[in-house]
Length: 187
Image 1 (spheres, rainbow, N blue to C red):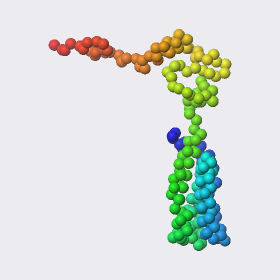
Image 2 (cartoon, rainbow, N blue to C red; image 1 turned 180 degrees about the horizontal axis):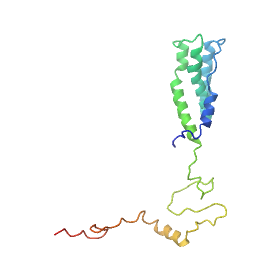
Image 3 (cartoon, helix red, strand yellow; image 1 turned 90 degrees about the vertical axis):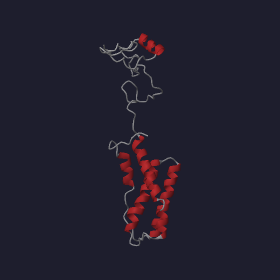
Image 4 (tube, rainbow, N blue to C red; image 1 turned 180 degrees about the vertical axis):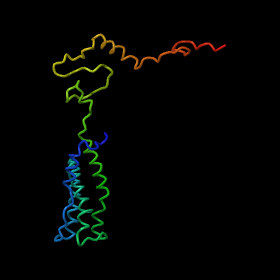
């Protein structure tokens, strides 16, 4: 998985997180209504996961977490030891873990491979294989071959391979070169 972007695009995740901000407490509603809302948010997140809508799943999980951690504790009737609160908050740890995974996925979702944006390839090109052959310019108005490429060179590479990857190291006086006998021992 590619590394997430640091601050190149806070846009999508930031916008989704803002959709799940803490709601003000309505003391006219009893806590049982908040419990039903929490269960509904989890159910909606599950439905969005099944349909592959991870942006909406992320929003529902963040709303669920915000409801349990920010909104409900400010309600005048709130009791952290309430059995119904404990029951509704059991999936909280898994929900937050899933939200973190989705957040990373969303941050890395639209990262474009820089090789695809090469000036020698159109933007919609897909790399099918890696080769040591010289790059060919497929852009509009090109002949298809780089200006300094010769057909003979390309045929030679295709038949004999790309050749050695690096030239052999230089041989200095007193050193043994490849294929040479060792120097005689000093007298």
